[in-house]
Amino acid sequence: MSRWPQKKLLEIAQVMMGQSPPGETYNARGEGIPFFQGKAEFGDVYPTPRKWCSEPLKIAEPGDILLSVRAPVGPTNIVHVKSCIGRGLAAIRANQGLILPSLLLYFFKAYEQSIAQLGVGSTFNAIGKDDIGNLEIPVPPLSHQEQIVGILNESDHLRRLRAETDRQTADLVPALFHEMFGDASTNPRNFRWFKIGDLTELVTSGLTPLGGAENYTTDGPYFFRSQNVQMNRIDFEDIACLPLNIHESMSRTKVREGDVLLNITGASIGRVAWVEKLEREANVNQHVCIIRPKQDVVLPPYLSVFLSTPYGQEVINQTQAGASRQGLNHEQVRSITVMVPPVSEQRVFAARVAEIRAMGAEQAASRRRLDDLFQSLLHRAFQGEL
Figure 1: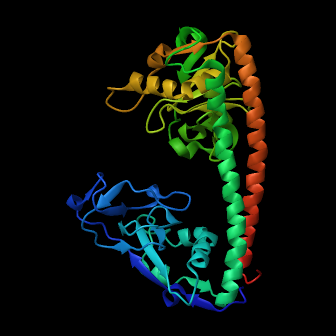
Figure 2 (figure 1 turned 45 degrees about the horizontal axis):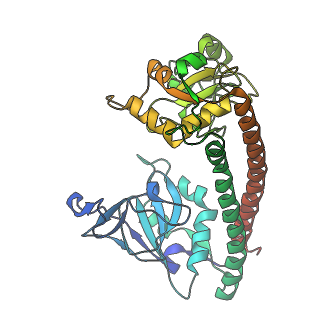
Figure 3 (figure 1 turned 120 degrees about the vertical axis):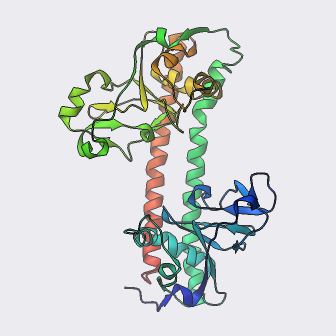
């Protein structure tokens, strides 16, 4: 329990629910003021406009907190220019002299999961003005608010510096590829070209077992889906697992270390990563293609990074262009041509990539520690312990 007095949000801030303007009043041409509709436009701190509105119905002013009130409920951003807001958002404006806007923003970050729960049980995840206005917030004296915000700002700044460094590290791999092999669109070193079908032992995709997610378990062989295949990185955060008997029935699509996984349908088409190490057996669904390279000709890290380059992504897009829906079939994947340097040079590339990934792993551990520290400070701030 906080030692600070509790106040309802409506006592210390104004809450304005968004309202979508008529369709004919908004555009993608930059005419009018920015129009934000929901979480999809949020960034780390500020939203990025995709549409503009000439006749806004609800307006957020610079410095207002934008709260996502519809699927998902809880995420926040700060609006930095006068903007129109749609029904997926609420604008929250701190009352000067009662609470600092920064402290109010940190409150929403500290209790994001609790606020999200307010929307559970409705037809779709959403919260209304009463839900927001009745939120109870510990409110310390203004002089102490400034101290708390100073501590949280410093911790948050360290997190952002770490995240920016991580982004720079992620850029090292494509930069290394370009340094060693040049731009594939011009092939300055005249490397030979091969079709993927000639470089591989297997090109195939899996399937989703009858019953879909009802089959998923918390243990057992991994089941890679498109969300697990990020660019040159396998993401195990939201990994599903399969019962062993279902995994065994899908024997042709078992994943091996060294396989390259390529997303072949939907919005994530073209995302590609190689399987460096597996702690347990694994399989894939129908949205993920297994490319098993002949490693005496092409190494998995090289093939994955090649396909992730602007040239490789353009080839993938052109290969699937014209289909009724975004998607690549196995024959199209096999037809994609790849610039192939000598394996000796690929080995040097793979070794340097491994060094970069090891550095990235150390940075990720550092980022988790900073995130844990920040969450601890947020909790302590609203318990009156800072």
